[in-house]
Image (tube, rainbow, N blue to C red):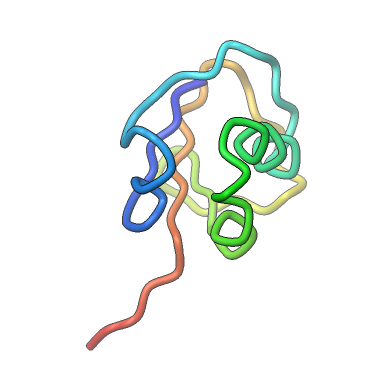
Length: 77
């Protein structure tokens, strides 16, 4: 599974990286990422996840070939 992170998450992870383990959904993915870097936990809890250019919810079934984009909240104008 390919992971792309943006904004503040790049302080905790490489902008693009791969995970080799089977991950069923966004809750499991979030838990794996917290294991990799526990300091990212608070930010990850507020992030949105997307696959195939569309936002997904926690019930979305992830596949090993997916590219998951993780987007922290942002503000601006």
